[in-house]
Image (cartoon, rainbow, N blue to C red; front, side, top):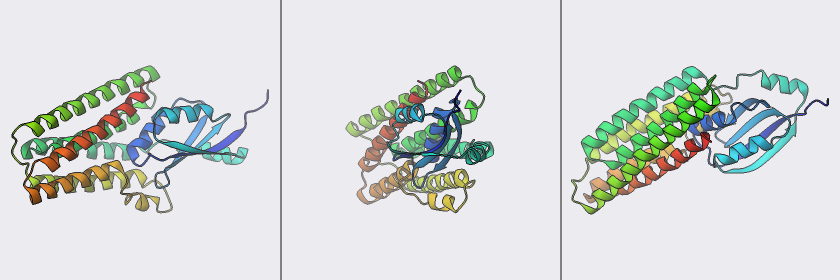
Length: 273
């Protein structure tokens, strides 16, 4: 029987720009016998998959995540290089994953409470985005050694729960648009969002710390990451509330963030297929 060839295949995912999306890719490819290791470069939005045999199944699973798969580079690798890559640690460091999970879940609670206190839908929406990331990290931690069917069931439940909360948030935004509401507290909006921005930067730094060549420093300043954009958007909304004395900047940003959370829920549901 002819031995399967070994390959190092680079997949470019144009929408993979944060550590939670890396975790989703890992979960999606978990369980494929021909996949030996994964190496991520968030700065370049590439994942290197060391595998045997055809990359077609890997490609189809990555397409299913809707992360903008737009190029594939396949290179045959030597047996020596294959064994070296396959022998490496291709799992996300569990201790670091626990750290970022605690950071994200803590700020979910902080932003949810301060969002209601300040009457800011932007903060409430951002808290749900933090919760969405927490779901991904929990699934990634729990997936190791778990029964595949059970993992998919939990992914579906978390996706539906996340989407339900986001839809409720959108309904609340609409209600506040058409009814009288007090102007949100811009001070709390700005201060809490600044802390959340720092928390996201720390989370990304922790995830990237295990990679060499200073990549973690470069990745920590990528301002295209969804979490950083969202935090900046809430800060901007707070400034606009201050300047205009209006509730609408907060509601507009809140609605946008809720839609982003729904998109994340759809991706989690795809893990449950």
